Amino acid sequence: MKSKEVAHKEVVSIKEGNSLGRIRTPVVDGARQRIIGFIVDDQKWYLETKIVRFATMRGMRQEVVTVDDDSSIVPVKNLYKIHPYLKDNIQLVGIKIFSEAGRLLGEVDDFIFNHQTGKIESYLIRNNFMSIGWKNVYSVGKEMLIVKDGLDLQEIPDAAGEISDVDLNSLFEQRQVSFLLGKILSRDMRDDNGDVILPAGSIIDDTSIGRMKTLGKFTELLMSVEAEE
Image (cartoon, rainbow, N blue to C red; front, side, top):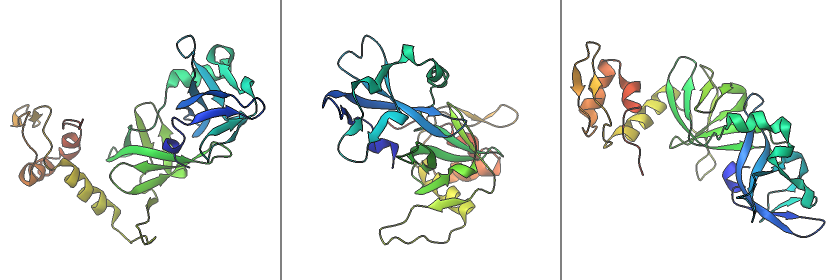
Protein backbone atom coordinates (compact mmCIF):
# COMPACT_ATOMS: atom_id res chain seq x y z
CA MET A 1 0.00 0.00 0.00
CA LYS A 2 1.04 3.65 -0.44
CA SER A 3 2.44 5.58 2.50
CA LYS A 4 -0.02 8.41 1.90
CA GLU A 5 -2.88 5.98 2.46
CA VAL A 6 -1.76 5.54 6.08
CA ALA A 7 -0.99 9.17 6.92
CA HIS A 8 -3.40 10.81 9.40
CA LYS A 9 -5.31 7.60 10.08
CA GLU A 10 -6.61 7.12 13.62
CA VAL A 11 -4.85 4.49 15.75
CA VAL A 12 -7.21 2.29 17.77
CA SER A 13 -6.37 -0.33 20.43
CA ILE A 14 -8.20 -3.64 20.02
CA LYS A 15 -8.16 -4.64 23.70
CA GLU A 16 -9.35 -1.37 25.24
CA GLY A 17 -11.17 0.15 22.27
CA ASN A 18 -9.40 3.48 22.76
CA SER A 19 -8.33 6.06 20.23
CA LEU A 20 -4.57 6.49 20.73
CA GLY A 21 -3.88 9.29 18.25
CA ARG A 22 -3.21 9.68 14.55
CA ILE A 23 -0.40 8.55 12.28
CA ARG A 24 1.93 11.40 11.40
CA THR A 25 5.11 10.27 9.61
CA PRO A 26 6.92 6.96 9.01
CA VAL A 27 10.19 6.02 10.68
CA VAL A 28 12.34 4.61 7.88
CA ASP A 29 15.35 2.29 7.95
CA GLY A 30 17.06 3.53 4.79
CA ALA A 31 19.72 0.82 4.66
CA ARG A 32 17.13 -1.96 4.67
CA GLN A 33 14.43 0.02 2.85
CA ARG A 34 11.69 -0.70 5.34
CA ILE A 35 9.34 1.05 7.74
CA ILE A 36 10.00 0.23 11.38
CA GLY A 37 7.19 2.34 12.81
CA PHE A 38 5.21 5.56 12.69
CA ILE A 39 5.29 8.69 14.80
CA VAL A 40 1.87 9.19 16.39
CA ASP A 41 0.24 12.46 17.44
CA ASP A 42 -1.96 12.07 20.50
CA GLN A 43 -3.63 14.59 22.82
CA LYS A 44 -0.36 15.02 24.73
CA TRP A 45 1.95 15.25 21.70
CA TYR A 46 3.43 18.46 23.10
CA LEU A 47 4.89 16.58 26.09
CA GLU A 48 6.82 13.88 24.21
CA THR A 49 7.05 12.15 20.86
CA LYS A 50 5.46 8.71 20.66
CA ILE A 51 5.83 5.86 18.21
CA VAL A 52 3.87 2.81 17.18
CA ARG A 53 6.26 0.06 16.08
CA PHE A 54 5.37 -1.78 12.90
CA ALA A 55 5.53 -5.13 14.67
CA THR A 56 2.63 -4.14 16.96
CA MET A 57 0.32 -2.96 14.17
CA ARG A 58 -2.45 -5.42 13.35
CA GLY A 59 -4.33 -3.72 10.54
CA MET A 60 -3.98 -0.58 8.44
CA ARG A 61 -5.84 -1.17 5.19
CA GLN A 62 -9.26 -0.08 6.44
CA GLU A 63 -10.52 3.19 7.93
CA VAL A 64 -8.32 3.01 11.04
CA VAL A 65 -5.00 1.48 12.10
CA THR A 66 -5.41 -1.17 14.78
CA VAL A 67 -2.92 -2.23 17.46
CA ASP A 68 -3.08 -4.82 20.24
CA ASP A 69 -3.53 -2.52 23.21
CA ASP A 70 -2.75 0.91 24.65
CA SER A 71 0.85 -0.08 25.41
CA SER A 72 1.55 -0.29 21.66
CA ILE A 73 2.10 3.48 21.61
CA VAL A 74 5.53 4.03 23.22
CA PRO A 75 7.45 7.23 24.06
CA VAL A 76 10.56 7.69 21.91
CA LYS A 77 12.75 8.00 25.01
CA ASN A 78 12.01 4.34 25.82
CA LEU A 79 12.99 3.03 22.37
CA TYR A 80 16.75 3.48 22.21
CA LYS A 81 17.18 1.25 19.17
CA ILE A 82 14.96 3.56 17.12
CA HIS A 83 16.90 6.74 17.97
CA PRO A 84 19.41 6.37 15.07
CA TYR A 85 16.56 6.19 12.55
CA LEU A 86 14.92 9.26 14.02
CA LYS A 87 18.23 11.09 13.78
CA ASP A 88 18.52 10.10 10.11
CA ASN A 89 15.00 11.56 9.61
CA ILE A 90 14.44 9.95 6.20
CA GLN A 91 11.02 11.03 4.94
CA LEU A 92 11.36 9.88 1.28
CA VAL A 93 8.42 11.84 -0.15
CA GLY A 94 9.80 14.87 -1.98
CA ILE A 95 13.48 13.86 -2.09
CA LYS A 96 15.34 13.91 -5.43
CA ILE A 97 16.15 10.78 -7.41
CA PHE A 98 19.56 10.52 -9.08
CA SER A 99 21.18 7.74 -11.09
CA GLU A 100 24.69 6.56 -10.20
CA ALA A 101 25.94 8.56 -13.17
CA GLY A 102 24.39 11.74 -11.74
CA ARG A 103 21.29 11.99 -13.93
CA LEU A 104 18.34 13.67 -12.22
CA LEU A 105 15.30 11.44 -12.71
CA GLY A 106 12.77 13.39 -10.65
CA GLU A 107 11.42 13.37 -7.11
CA VAL A 108 9.74 10.71 -4.96
CA ASP A 109 5.99 11.30 -4.95
CA ASP A 110 5.18 8.35 -2.70
CA PHE A 111 6.34 4.82 -1.95
CA ILE A 112 4.61 1.46 -1.77
CA PHE A 113 5.32 -0.89 1.12
CA ASN A 114 4.19 -4.33 2.21
CA HIS A 115 1.50 -3.78 4.86
CA GLN A 116 2.49 -7.00 6.65
CA THR A 117 6.28 -6.64 6.81
CA GLY A 118 6.94 -2.92 6.32
CA LYS A 119 9.33 -3.66 3.43
CA ILE A 120 9.39 -0.86 0.84
CA GLU A 121 8.66 -2.38 -2.55
CA SER A 122 8.82 0.57 -4.94
CA TYR A 123 9.09 4.35 -5.24
CA LEU A 124 6.71 6.42 -7.36
CA ILE A 125 8.26 9.23 -9.41
CA ARG A 126 6.45 12.58 -9.23
CA ASN A 127 4.81 13.64 -12.52
CA ASN A 128 6.42 10.74 -14.42
CA PHE A 129 3.84 7.98 -13.89
CA MET A 130 6.65 5.51 -13.32
CA SER A 131 7.99 3.54 -10.37
CA ILE A 132 11.38 2.25 -9.28
CA GLY A 133 11.60 -1.19 -7.67
CA TRP A 134 13.57 -1.46 -4.42
CA LYS A 135 16.13 -3.79 -6.01
CA ASN A 136 17.20 -0.95 -8.32
CA VAL A 137 17.98 1.40 -5.43
CA TYR A 138 21.65 1.84 -4.58
CA SER A 139 21.20 3.97 -1.45
CA VAL A 140 18.53 5.88 0.47
CA GLY A 141 19.45 9.14 2.18
CA LYS A 142 17.76 12.09 3.84
CA GLU A 143 18.02 14.31 0.76
CA MET A 144 18.19 11.94 -2.18
CA LEU A 145 17.63 8.46 -3.57
CA ILE A 146 20.47 6.99 -5.64
CA VAL A 147 19.39 4.37 -8.16
CA LYS A 148 21.36 2.03 -10.37
CA ASP A 149 22.18 2.90 -13.95
CA GLY A 150 20.22 0.85 -16.46
CA LEU A 151 17.51 0.30 -13.88
CA ASP A 152 14.33 -1.60 -14.61
CA LEU A 153 11.55 0.99 -14.48
CA GLN A 154 7.88 0.18 -14.58
CA GLU A 155 5.31 2.51 -16.00
CA ILE A 156 2.19 2.81 -13.88
CA PRO A 157 -0.71 1.28 -15.85
CA ASP A 158 -3.17 3.60 -17.54
CA ALA A 159 -6.95 3.41 -17.13
CA ALA A 160 -7.07 0.38 -19.42
CA GLY A 161 -4.47 -1.40 -17.35
CA GLU A 162 -1.99 -1.49 -20.22
CA ILE A 163 1.70 -0.66 -20.05
CA SER A 164 3.23 0.70 -23.23
CA ASP A 165 6.75 0.05 -24.51
CA VAL A 166 8.76 3.26 -24.27
CA ASP A 167 12.27 4.57 -24.74
CA LEU A 168 12.94 5.40 -21.10
CA ASN A 169 15.65 7.99 -21.74
CA SER A 170 13.45 9.77 -24.26
CA LEU A 171 10.45 9.57 -21.92
CA PHE A 172 12.37 11.12 -19.03
CA GLU A 173 13.67 13.93 -21.18
CA GLN A 174 10.22 14.71 -22.60
CA ARG A 175 8.73 14.91 -19.13
CA GLN A 176 11.61 16.97 -17.79
CA VAL A 177 11.15 19.44 -20.65
CA SER A 178 7.41 19.62 -19.92
CA PHE A 179 8.23 20.29 -16.27
CA LEU A 180 10.57 23.16 -17.16
CA LEU A 181 8.43 25.00 -19.71
CA GLY A 182 7.00 28.18 -18.20
CA LYS A 183 9.01 27.88 -14.97
CA ILE A 184 10.92 30.90 -13.63
CA LEU A 185 14.69 30.68 -13.24
CA SER A 186 15.66 31.15 -9.58
CA ARG A 187 19.33 32.01 -10.17
CA ASP A 188 21.69 33.11 -12.93
CA MET A 189 22.84 30.40 -15.27
CA ARG A 190 26.51 30.87 -16.13
CA ASP A 191 28.86 29.30 -18.66
CA ASP A 192 32.18 27.70 -17.77
CA ASN A 193 33.83 31.13 -17.86
CA GLY A 194 31.40 32.53 -15.31
CA ASP A 195 29.50 34.69 -17.77
CA VAL A 196 25.72 34.93 -17.38
CA ILE A 197 23.96 33.11 -20.20
CA LEU A 198 20.46 33.18 -18.71
CA PRO A 199 19.61 35.64 -15.92
CA ALA A 200 17.54 34.86 -12.83
CA GLY A 201 13.86 35.64 -13.37
CA SER A 202 13.84 34.39 -16.97
CA ILE A 203 10.85 32.33 -18.05
CA ILE A 204 12.01 28.98 -19.40
CA ASP A 205 11.04 28.27 -23.01
CA ASP A 206 12.09 25.84 -25.76
CA THR A 207 14.93 28.13 -26.87
CA SER A 208 16.50 28.38 -23.42
CA ILE A 209 16.13 24.63 -22.86
CA GLY A 210 17.85 23.90 -26.18
CA ARG A 211 20.67 26.27 -25.30
CA MET A 212 21.23 24.68 -21.91
CA LYS A 213 21.33 21.23 -23.53
CA THR A 214 23.96 22.40 -26.00
CA LEU A 215 26.09 23.80 -23.16
CA GLY A 216 25.69 20.64 -21.06
CA LYS A 217 23.75 22.48 -18.36
CA PHE A 218 20.35 20.85 -18.68
CA THR A 219 20.56 19.09 -15.29
CA GLU A 220 21.69 22.33 -13.65
CA LEU A 221 18.71 24.06 -15.23
CA LEU A 222 16.35 21.47 -13.73
CA MET A 223 17.68 22.31 -10.28
CA SER A 224 17.55 26.09 -10.76
CA VAL A 225 13.87 26.86 -11.20
CA GLU A 226 11.51 28.26 -8.61
CA ALA A 227 9.50 25.67 -6.69
CA GLU A 228 5.75 25.77 -7.10
CA GLU A 229 3.72 26.79 -4.05
